[in-house]
Length: 464
Ligand code: BG6
Image (cartoon, rainbow, N blue to C red; front, top):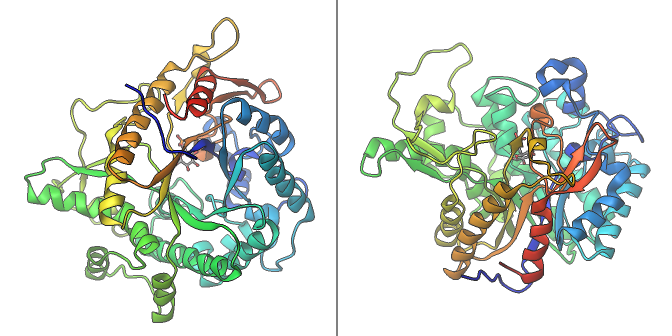
């Protein structure tokens, strides 16, 4: 069977500034929470590898753009590093070296037929602002909006696709629940305030963008994890799955697309004294400034069942897990190289949910991919990684994307995570995701993997 995709489908990949650029202390860049955390607690990072060692995109971006051409990209998303562009956001002074770098990157992408999609925030709070409370602070929301406007003014003549955040639930989970991000707190109430402020910051940036009347569009990138109950006939399991979907997905999806928070989550927060501080004026801004399009990151689903063990009282207060149990479904397919479930149909279920319950919002798959630990074991005698497992992973997901399109989904593209293997926060380089291998022991030398050549044929044929 042949799988043909719509004309002008976006084929490409995604990355982020802090995970790829390097030069974390150079060229006048300010410090962000990752730089600070690494310098103060290096043991937290896999093999003690921090943002000091990345894939050196700051120096090698021209070579990388050629590799994107060779691997079939017509579009590519990365993020601007707030702390690089405005090292001290309390002054607003722009770093001219950063402007030069991002201008060159954008211009070179365009010159090579690759549309730059730019995200404004990928987990990288400037440290000066974290000291003011980070996303807990309304002052930081205002400084973010000022930063967003600066980006639109500097680059908005050429960048036509903007995103306000990547996966805004992750700073809540990582920073306020589970300890994978600085400030490494366990405080659900503060996490919910952060969630609300991120949604507010997004709406305000969207308002600012639309007010500038530039020729382009703006959205948000969400990691949507379709959630399945253990037993569809069991009311308690269904309620557990609805809670998980509400907390991890709809808390951002609903304000972004519908302009308001989900009522079941508001009721839950109220009942548990977790409601954030809001104002009617700010809620009106969220209501009036919804996204033009949505980026959907999909890696794996969630499976939930009713809480079986009673909630233990803990000093730090409640956690989302106090309201459901994870269901470890027997026989589920696993990625053998990194321990995540593989459930290809989840991408389709997500797209159909957007079609049926979110006004068929225009969207694209902004991340999907397969992390592999120890990938060097698959190198062949010519030095190329034969990642047939990745080709199969992408193929099977694309088949479900194709089916969703046939059923009317307005999904407009597919970006894999990622092009060049990159640094991944606390996991550093443990899991490799790229179409292109990066040899850290050899000046970050790049070598296209088998999947990279394969992706070029998919793009050339607009399908497979
Ligand atoms: C995505 C993030 O959710 O997952 C990326 O947007 C991240 O920033 C990617 O790198 C892979 O994560 P991990 O933990 O497998 O390295």
